[in-house]
Image 1 (cartoon, rainbow, N blue to C red):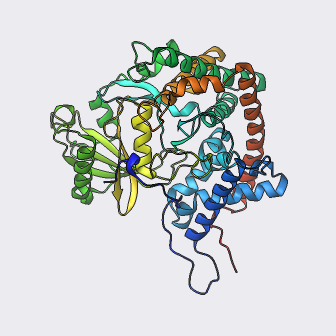
Image 2 (cartoon, one colour):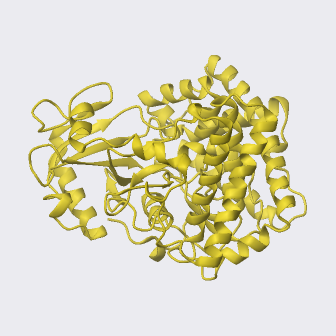
Image 3 (cartoon, rainbow, N blue to C red):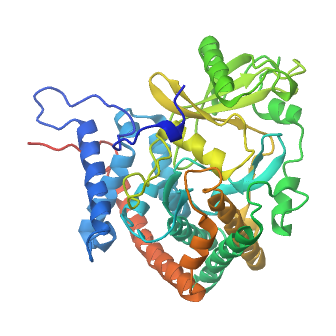
Length: 484
């Protein structure tokens, strides 16, 4: 198992995984070296942004130059999947092509490179990194009780709090257009509600200091969130039998989503034992004997992570009759899309799986006890429990008022996650007053974020059109190489 994120030394950003170099004599640079070179170039750009009055960023590119930047960034971000001809790579590119909102969700690296080094004067928090309406939802806490909050920690990293607000505002605008069919004026109002919710939440936690023990449950959540809890009122037995287990209940069924790899049970039993030791999970109670019954590969899940290796592990439940079994997910951890791009600071969340586990432990106090980091075949994988009551909002069902209420609730949830950065994270000062002060004057602050968001939406729309054209022309079938 990996060491605690707080005890890890700072490291230079590394590529997602080691790849084989070019064939001898080809004159092409190794993909690993090329990825490292580009990562370091953007890190230098981010550092310059804090030292110089004016810095040219990728978002300043136009026309064909911007098209080439979009193409090369997306290829770089999917280097591993393209080189390995991963089945999920083609599927992901198809998803990104079909939906503007999916393109936004699946190109976080492209988005954040446009912000390299920005907002260095703003207070630092443990950023979620990929804020949008689809990354809030219902999930289990440590007591297996459903709660609402932020639910995707793949990109967590310490950085300026406004980076989450900027991406969140853009996400709400794009989702309100694509899922709600609203025009620019209403999009802006919905995004503003998200910002108001954040400020309202931050002011509340600054005054009451309850961010550690408050949870948004069915009994105390806003009215707009309650339907999410009602939709997950089904038994674990029905969930398991209806979607995952084969007829006898002894293992996973085989279908287009799951491919059983039962030969790896012993290997994953060791991983579960190590994870339990790391997180202090004791056998007994609802966790049962922590015995692995079966293992399966999971296909076609997520947007940003589509095409990355993912395993489901079936644990024997306490009744041992397949009605209360537990499913643990192991997903390949990737580096944060914000790594090397946020302004310089003194905090380190760790690398890959450690970093993701650290994010969950900070953002969701008393969260899923199975969140952790393991190593599989030399690569970092994050772990978490799959639960019958994991659920996201059906955005296309919202009315205009419901969009605003949902945006406000998400803003408050994000504020609570940020407010925990000084209690459970590495910040050594009271973060809430600093953030509230940085948001003054409030109306100017909101207008700045919304103007940024409107410009980003227009830029991303052009990026999406360029991507679709390049996809049709075969641009993402092979990776780029540097020749001499």
